[in-house]
Image (cartoon, rainbow, N blue to C red; front, side):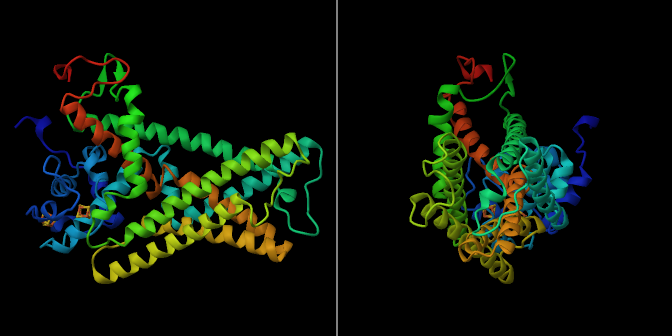
Length: 411
Ligand code: SF4
Ligand code: SF4
């Protein structure tokens, strides 16, 4: 047999999968029951049996570029019926964690943001960064670093500019790393599916004019409605907690952007026009923010309870990475609610440290996007877009971006 045809197992990958909750991997004897019972597997692209085999063989890079890994929503149906107790749902979850690490740059940040100690250190570092930036800003503007007295008003303690500097820098970094990972993932899934990874020197993507309306929008709709999630049997209720958390992010992100424009930009141009924070409780933005806060806390609470219950029933196991992500999101919700409650009862000595803690938690969650389990938002979304597009390409209904080939023969 030619040497290039021999399987070269990536032992570090196998260990990574086992450490991330896939320790039952080697129990699989390839009966394919899991692929038959999976409510999300399709005849054209069945899973998770092949993923179990590839993982046993240690084909880490092949699995990193396997879009089907991201079609699994860890519903546990296959785990329930597996005759060997191989827990394919948990193994796929562990494979996803390893795929995220595979695309993470720099990898050191993935290691930090996937350990409890690393996350706590990141929160403290982010709190420190906000305070140092605020101090440097006060030096630059020649104003004394404000130690507020009287009624709690957060922007008198930390003016908006230093906070914006920290968060906009973070946003630029996270966007760059996320985009880089998505592009690399796209190339790998194209290669894995036998599609060309470049055409006339360009990356092979949907035509730009079709990308959003034809492929991204249907994927976004599926994600917002949790259409596939709802097909799961054993852990159906997980969709509710998940959807609450997702919508809370959308609400809170929108509110933050609106407040940033209103208070940080318009408020600076017209200081006495009533744009400053805090907003009164009946302001629509404030009401939306409070609904978002309730949803983020309620959603994570549901997810925590579901995980405990399903673990006790033997349907799923939860890895450290699962709990870390839930923990960060919960910390963002609780610290945000505490920030508001303590402001309302006006205890300055507690309010300002809580506010800085909340900013540290938000910054950590933000940074965790491309490095932790949170990245499933990026890669599952990309896999959905890819799946819609690849179906059209295979059916000869879609071409490639930038310059379209005329026929499928160019593939
Ligand atoms: S994971 Fe279980 S159900 Fe799936 S192929 Fe292996 S032994 Fe069969
Ligand atoms: S956990 Fe659910 S979605 Fe994932 S492979 Fe098993 S049955 Fe399919």
